[in-house]
Image 1: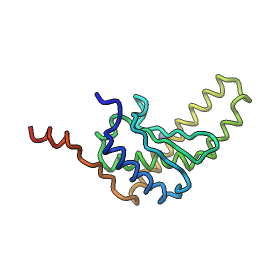
Image 2: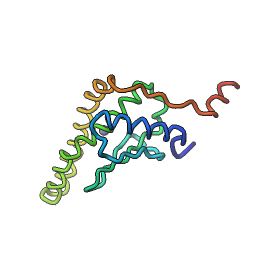
Image 3: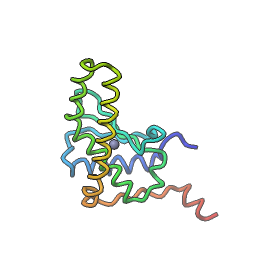
Image 4: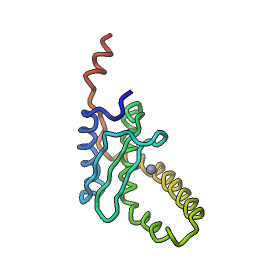
Length: 146
Ligand SMILES: [Zn+2]
């Protein structure tokens, strides 16, 4: 099994994500779609390093098995996390102020609730975005002919 996404898909998703980012007011951000898969359970994850308008989006290994409509919703969900970055920074102030187990609990609960909220919001915004159509890979065409 491949360890990452097909280069053709990564190149397409990089262009697609830049287009959506500018439509969603994130054109100042340098957003990279990683070829690496995200963690085993996550559909996708977004990593935001400190003090730089940069983000890396990692998509799950099952990303290509979803419908194009849901794939578009996943990309929108990840981009909305970037908009919430200033809110997430509140946790930098809390870290060290709370006992570590309490901090870990509050942080995990906050992350989970943010994902619930973005899952509710993303489809409503995604419907106004261009369709996501991953290029068909050569090997997939070959398999279909067998
Ligand atoms: Zn999320």
